Length: 134
Image (cartoon, rainbow, N blue to C red; front, side, top):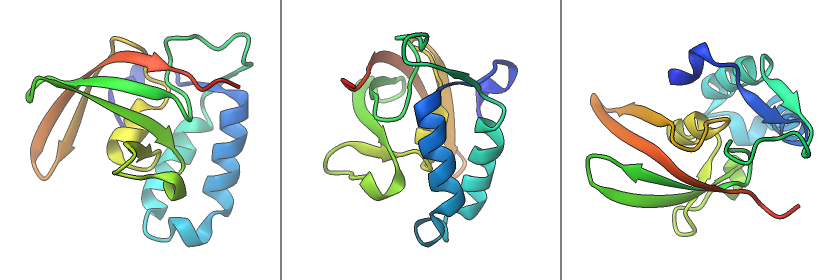
């Protein structure tokens, strides 16, 4: 799915529970994204699950605010990673099922990401991660 193939995905246990419940039961919301949802399920089923106390501050989780640097456009973009029904372009909320959203989950600050769309590659670096206040 991305360059994380060699590293085990790290997830907050609470996020794992929310994501698995959503991905396995959200049929209406997922009917157009079923293939992507199945790929995400396969990846998160292999994840290392951590408690809030043990979860690293430099790893993206659900509802994190992430600042990424678009290396080609040379500008910073900020997104909040959310479930599909909460996604909003206007509010810079990106779906966990969007290609970039899926790549961001479990990524670390400083990570370089490559997203290919319509035969074009986009290059991003994660500059900052702000976790929600729980």
